Length: 327
Image 1 (spheres, rainbow, N blue to C red):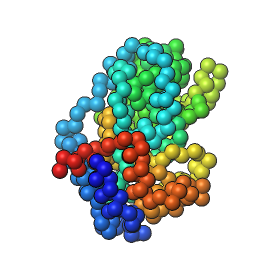
Image 2: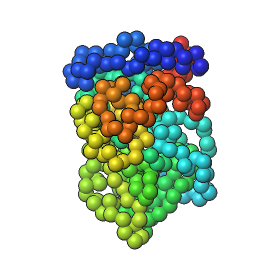
Image 3: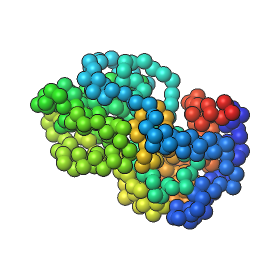
Image 4: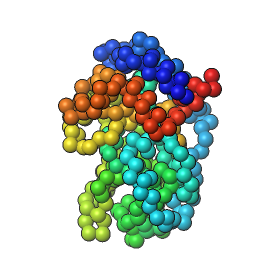
């Protein structure tokens, strides 16, 4: 893996230089001077993933009804795992067995290949610093599980199935980031016993926005319902929209940015149709302007150098690395 990381660094050491017009109607969106093997593999697997989904050959993610009505666990919180910031939850890690809630989150890959259709077919979602979790509302309780499947919170919420007044057969499952009594909702798996995980991302987002709009009380903290649920800020991936969102949400303490392809279904594990970048990488990689507060976060590193350092520090091996080793 070390050789692959060295190769990635050397091939991309000049930075991710793209034509400023690339975020418009540029014929080749990912026109790097020297396209790395990692980027080639990511682009290849991304297309294969889309084709499998079109043909209906993707694996079933899980039985959501069984997941929602499984017996609630009561493991003591693992401090180290529970305090992992959102970026560590977006990438694969060591397996940790804490029941059937382990490893159910859909995770991202470093966005090393810039899709040709980024501005038309992808959505950027802001990921605040916090704890990535799967929120399951059923049987009159709302329970949050971390990536390893360990329970990190249980409370009453106004989510369907999540409080003592809910109907017995009502249940809801959301992908969230938790920070200071706020659950920032990234994705929708089910709502009030209706399953959405196998629908395309753009449809899930439409339904998620609709459900949250229909339930404005979820945004209000009251006695008995202290935790609130809000949609994580998002926008289309045009250069103008991304820059505008970063300015508009400048008070949010960001861990990173997620990029979702409109067709991706919700499956556990890393997906080439979900990308991840740090905010300070946007000018270098996507030619997107960013607020001043992010500009010093690189500490003089290029994006490729940071990715290499991150992977080594966290002993992280992505599907890109594994694919390269098999070649």
